[in-house]
Amino acid sequence: MRDEWTFPNPATPLGSSTYYSLRFLPPELRQELALLHAWWAQVGEIPLRVREPSVALRKLGWWQEELERIEDRRPTHPLAQALQTVIRIRALPIVAFAEKVQSAERELSDPPRSSQALRQHCARDLGNLFMLCYRCQGLGENTGLRAAEALGTGCALIARIRDAGLLARRGISPVPLDWLREKGLHPAQLVSPEHRSALPDLLPRLGKLAEDQWDAVPLRDQPLFARIQKRLCSALLEEITALDFQVMEQRISLTPLRKLWLAWREHRRT
Figure (cartoon, rainbow, N blue to C red):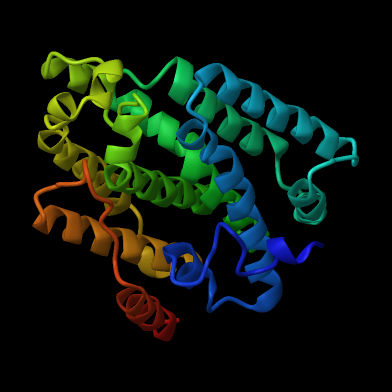
């Protein structure tokens, strides 16, 4: 494995929430989950990083083809080469990775039109990632996977709030299209500061959707990485709420010291 994909890797850098959610895990498990997070970040960043939608869709198509090469045990990307061993040993379903690619494609071509569609979109994103991480820990029963999906979906909704300004500047709506229509807007208009200034009024509803996902999950029964990620997301939502959801022109985050403190406290509860 190339050093760039060992923990901490580009998706789990020092000081990040993901870093602290994995930091207290056993080394082998930590590395497996870091690889999963790295693959998720590689795919998930494409709609945000690539300005031309047609180019972004081609890149996502390439990653879909790479999944097929993983199944044939002939991947070409160094990250995919490192990840294929985890997929094989842990018997991880390729369909979960494919759904992540598809959710990134839909972000560009067929964005969620309702709150239910957005929930399903987030379930295919971090909901699937959490389920894969649970499988790496031998938690494959239906009840555990439902909890994983709910926790991951809630975290994905909070990420949309945090990244709302970046999404809007790319012409991507962080909220469902029917909410956007309440303001008389469509996604392409969000590139204008004047129009995206309407979004903070809608973002608290995303926070409520996230909390609804979390309410049904007994957090104390979940694996450590999931408990830490949920705690960090909850704290971030509190911080953003205190600042009236003013995330259009700034990216609000917790300080590394606060992340460490929250992660360490959750680790001590184990």
